[in-house]
Length: 518
View 1 (cartoon, helix red, strand yellow):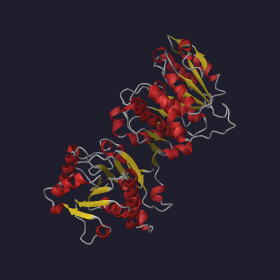
View 2 (view 1 turned 180 degrees about the vertical axis):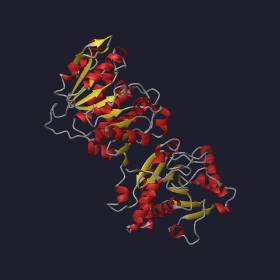
View 3 (view 1 turned 30 degrees about the vertical axis):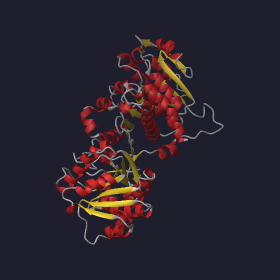
View 4 (view 1 turned 60 degrees about the vertical axis):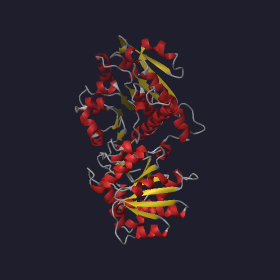
């Protein structure tokens, strides 16, 4: 699913219209798709009735077209016109001919008819404002939205709200939301995901985000040339490596996880098991020797490479041992539970010294912090490596503040992916995956279930496991991040609360996520 700005969406529609796919035809597709979502979501007996808040623009038109189809399918529909449409509007005439009922704000100044309608309909379509609005909202339309918002909050059994393209009052570029915005249970967006919908505070009003097509012609340059995408299950399913029946552990790659310290001993376990759960055939954990006795009984499937240490942290001379054992690994994960001691810094410098033939790499956690201390570190990694920073680690790598990064996540991830020549996975709400070639993937999930120590180790292990199986860096990172996000949602559902989810719960949930991709 393409991830677009408002101006990009306007350009797509303009180019489609110029190619012969008219605005009227696009609206017909959009309205039909919207109607199908409404029908499929709320078609149970006794609830086949819908009220629409209709504006003067395309969102109002989409709503009217959807209502014509719903009428045909046996629904009862009423359109409440909030912003006046042309007197000769063919969509209004078509809606009335289909048997719909029309109410208008102009003849309902005290909202009496609107209040009654809200009580009598099962579904409410919000089609007042579209993607082109600028805040703040003003006038009678803003007042009407606020009336509906307050009334819905007061009702014991309010209608189920579906936003048409976007919740009215959301800026689809910045993600800012007007105080009058009505929270939706489902947002049905048209043709592409508008970038503001995956930002806060807009995301608080979006609900379940779904996309329907508008009949765009194949080969449209304005559409095909966009390099930003929202990851979806179908893409991940297509991207995951094959699992041939005659495969063996060598077929599915080997992951070497280098990390661990006395202070952070569990990180390598989480990363290593996630690598196995991704489908990798063999996982070796390279850890400071004192950790082995405690960890081995907790992870019997792993093999081990014991490293020299200083006070439980990987020592500089461990680089020679790791380099001597790089003949089998098809992916190297560096950093989980590393710590930031000088001895470990020297280890990384030795590992990346000239002449080392390193496999595909994923660098995470303290590995990133130590990496940042090396001059021109990006030139020392096998390209493209996958870097998995959270905003604080990204700040260390870039010299920016975490606040600067969070205020401009998309452009910063893309800028440094190009500059460094590596894939950047900028973690957090709506994790971003940026490739050096300009491709960007967005994960449409924001959940506090993943706000736990150790969940990043699970993600890094997942990506390393997919990389070991032969996926390219960008594909491994994007698929891994999507699977990880779904596992966070699944773990929260199992636990009944986002507050109680541990990294181990996310790890356990990977089983169901992969099963659903089969």
